Length: 410
Ligand SMILES: C[S@@+](CC[C@H](N)C(=O)[O-])C[C@H]1O[C@@H](n2cnc3c(N)ncnc32)[C@H](O)[C@@H]1O
Ligand code: SF4
Image 1 (spheres, rainbow, N blue to C red):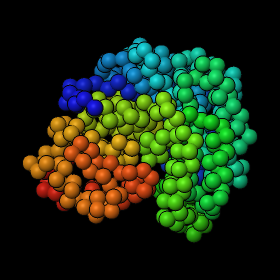
Image 2 (image 1 turned 45 degrees about the vertical axis):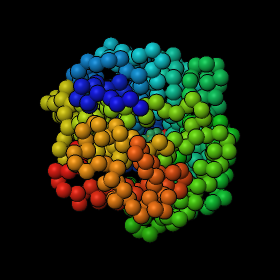
Image 3 (image 1 turned 180 degrees about the horizontal axis):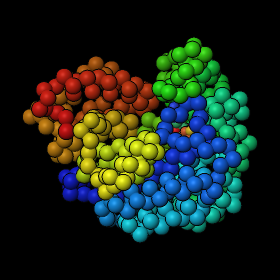
Image 4 (image 1 turned 90 degrees about the vertical axis):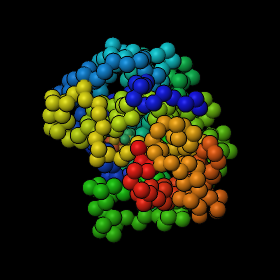
């Protein structure tokens, strides 16, 4: 990778737009979402219209920059918006920054929120990649997750995406699944994976269940009603998933992401480009000029933030400093952390060379072969190292905390 200009001299070429509306809140989800009810449709909802006006105000106040190479419309359930509403958003983005030729434009879609006709309308707007929130192919599991869709709808949605891809209307699509669910067995996960592969998604995101504070799952967990798998089970599942998907031709390029050749998500990767990313909407985190900014997570607070601070892209000192953030993301990628880039970026402020410091901080992991360090890179070998990334990262963050305050952090 070539060494980018210092962060403050570059403007993002990636943009995230957050659409917080969902039909209902799934039992495991703590994303900033606003449930609208099972029959909701964005075009008939005053809440959605009000939010879109705020979002456009937030976006319009941002500095103009180079045309974007990736745009990701996520949520929530952005497929709840009508094609006309999505068209308005895309129009504003095109007008403000423009989209570079060949830009990747992703839309997150929930299987119960669209039909084939709606999909085709959305694709004519310029969306060329879809991320489908499948989660499971088992109706009982879907009901247990609090999902609105069922397996038949998921298979149908996958079929429409396959057809659109074959017809050249869609460049790529991705399927989300959740693993390590309550009561899950090895056999059941093996079955889920086979069901997913039958749909031949060019990209798969497989997330370990996280029991998030404030969710229905957390309440059940506290009440002793969730039979969660052991840590070893999760590591075994990851190893199994890694080898089964490798056999089917999928590369494991980030801890939770697998892609067939040519289908890696460019938006996911933009994080590491050094140029940061724009982000707008409720709870959205942007990284512009090397500084993070998290917008408020409730509608009233976001509305007031837009009235008073729209256009502000600066950092918040309470947020995680960029060095930790980059390590966190870097260790989840197959190629790991680019140490030469970090050293030259100025984020590493100690006089001790970064490689030497890492040698000490991660000694046990390096000795066991669960982390690999060269002059250029620190990486965790998949799948064993990936499976332990949280533990390695925890050691690294602890070592950073213990280091002299003026030393490493950015
Ligand atoms: C923000 S959601 C957007 C997708 C879309 N709303 C949907 O669910 O159909 C992105 C993905 O995050 C994953 N996810 C959300 N909360 C999670 C949790 N607590 N544990 C594991 N995965 C989670 C789900 O797989 C979901 O598809
Ligand atoms: S998982 Fe997706 S559909 Fe479910 S509440 Fe979260 S964002 Fe909404």
